[in-house]
Length: 73
Image 1 (tube, rainbow, N blue to C red):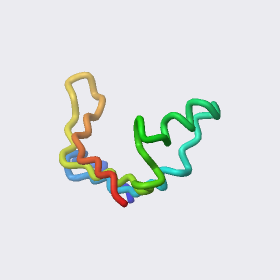
Image 2 (image 1 turned 30 degrees about the vertical axis):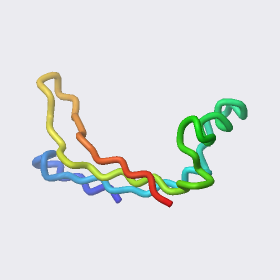
Image 3 (image 1 turned 180 degrees about the vertical axis):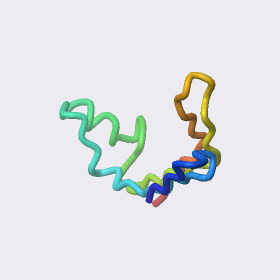
C-alpha cells in the first residue's frame, strides 16, 4: 500500500510485503546469490516487509523515506 498526501508528503505512507522468492534482477546467478543464505535466505525467510517510519522532503525537492525492513518466516 502506498498512500500519497500531495498536500503534505510527510503524511504519506508506504507499507508493502514482498515475496522474496520472486526477486528477479534479470541475472540468474545474481538472483540465486541474493536468495541464498549469504543474503536473504528465502527458503527460511520468504517474506520481506517494508514500512515507512518517516517521510520528509529534502531541500533539493526529493523525498527521503526512513523505514523499517523486516524479514520473516
